[in-house]
Image 1 (cartoon, rainbow, N blue to C red):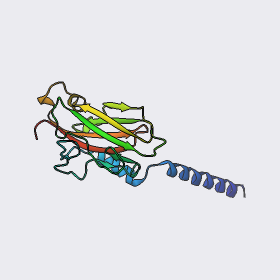
Image 2: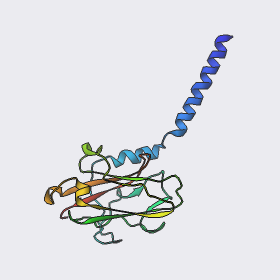
Image 3: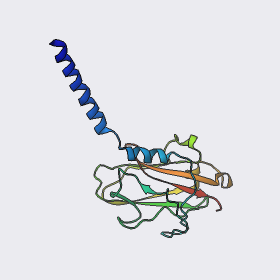
Image 4: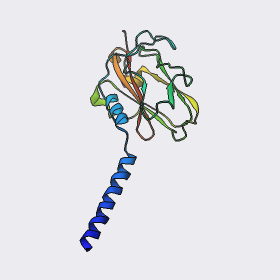
Length: 181
């Protein structure tokens, strides 16, 4: 009888533990999205001027399942505008507009970049922790920040930009080309 009571308590504790861990974990869709964000840069959405898309890469600049419907790339909730210009010169600034609508728990965005997957663990190249919701957040990055290189032509290449929230959940990602197309 004592062992049955012990087994029942143990079963209850294990079940409660699985429910707590399962409830706090990321969805499979979010996990898959984050894994895709860590793949090598390939192709890019060409945006030579503000708002104009001349070549679309469907893998670039999607919003993660966790933030879909709450965040938009652009200046408003319904106007999609990928970062521009892309491709860009080393001395140019890339502009990323992120519109946050009704996100009470998002107070930080971190921007990471890498050329090769092995560089994905580098520290963030930009941090915005002055976010109030709803709001338009504009992030500007130059070629040196994106590439991490000190000279123009050695920075030429394709770079993956990843934008994460303060809890390191991926919000969006896409590829930026530095140098001639």
